[in-house]
Amino acid sequence: MTTPAIDDSALDQIRSLQKPGRENLLQKIVGIYVEQSNCLRERIGEAVAKADARELLESAHSLKSSSGNVGAVRVSTLSQKLEAAGRDGQLDGTAALFEELVIELERAICELRSVAGAEAP
Image 1 (tube, rainbow, N blue to C red):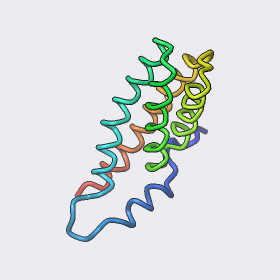
Image 2: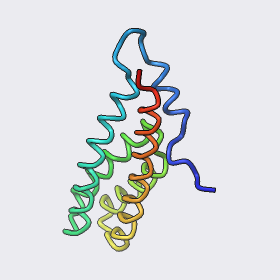
Image 3: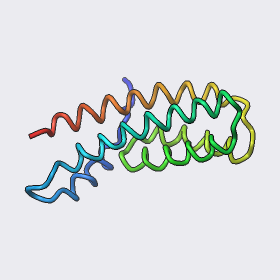
Image 4: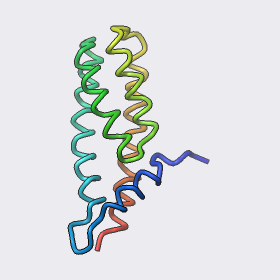
């Protein structure tokens, strides 16, 4: 059995902020996350390819934080490892970490889209 890509408690926390009669907050946040995480994934990939430690640090940090907010725990953990590699300037092994990140990010996005779509009015 595959571990869920998303921790439901983070989504429950977002749902608790929903105000009646307002735009669906979860759908809005998922939309923003998908757009930003795809951009950050590209930046991380470029940083790994160019061995750009500073860009890797900054992009991975951003993805780590936003992923944690939506409950994408595995994406957040992998981003944290890439962030540390960038901070330490130790870029060996980052290509493999990035490949794993891409897979986990796709899983998380699919699951988030499914959950947000199920909550559409």
